[in-house]
Length: 138
Figure 1 (spheres, helix red, strand yellow):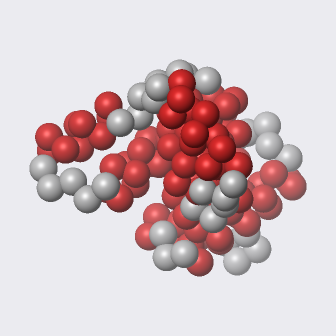
Figure 2 (cartoon, one colour):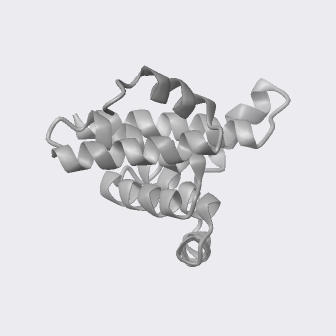
């Protein structure tokens, strides 16, 4: 189930990433998929940027590891780094990953809601919609 949640989170993240690139046509959206492939030097550069506070760099690594390399542990790792760096899409993705994992503890579920609230506070429309669906105790 964790893998399904991660794939869902990655697809949501990719959609948001592709939309953030302001594509004007379907051709540009399709080409965004090619942008997920990274050269080794790009992975190093983005890793450095992610560790130095870039949410966009960390999100890009998350999408790369989840969509190209299919290394879901690394994808989840970079999703959390991106969320910690303030990236609203990554914060939403972290919520998806943590809330859909059936083996998650109560503390993990609370942490998931924490990330959802952070994303909603940055006006992420998906996060706002999902936050409204939660019960008041969530």
